[in-house]
Image (cartoon, rainbow, N blue to C red; front, side):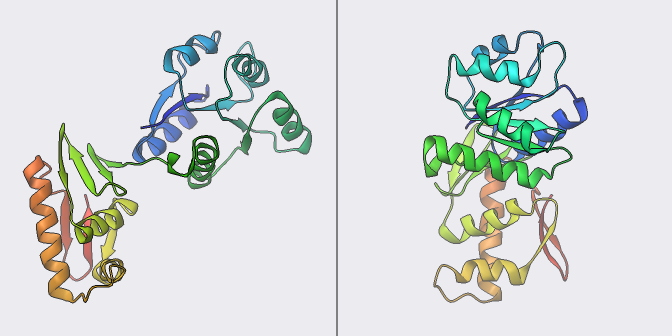
Length: 223
């Protein structure tokens, strides 16, 4: 699980980014002391830093220089200034990328993943998807809940992955069947029903009861 330090003094943005990245399996640590960001940096030892340009007392450029004295960790600037001069200055200070406010959380997530991949290899993307304590590792084909884990079959893994990607939304049976067809096995309506039932029982065995709910005539939802 990759650790991300977010240095952002706007509590609304900080909370939104923290919630979003946590949902994708990152371990997010909001900075606690804007007068001494390096204390937070050394305590967390993050794999990536999200750094706001405008901060109390010392700005993002200052803390970027300080971090670069100790580490080559990827730094993504968050800025309200999207002009070329800001971008050039940020890069010259040692930043790896920047994103301008207001930004789409999906774009931010893609930038975070790209920076981690570039710094630590392709497998550096967050391995887990998380939902209400449920941690799914699609690469490993496993799911964890409250300290317990279980391995999934290929079809169960694909179903849970599709539900995780759209958690909180209804996923149609047609889409899930398309996911299962990718296994090159014959799939019919009954096959999907059987696999969803098996997946439910595995989650219930971990204590995650009623996590997958049926929406009659529509599909399934990870509630």
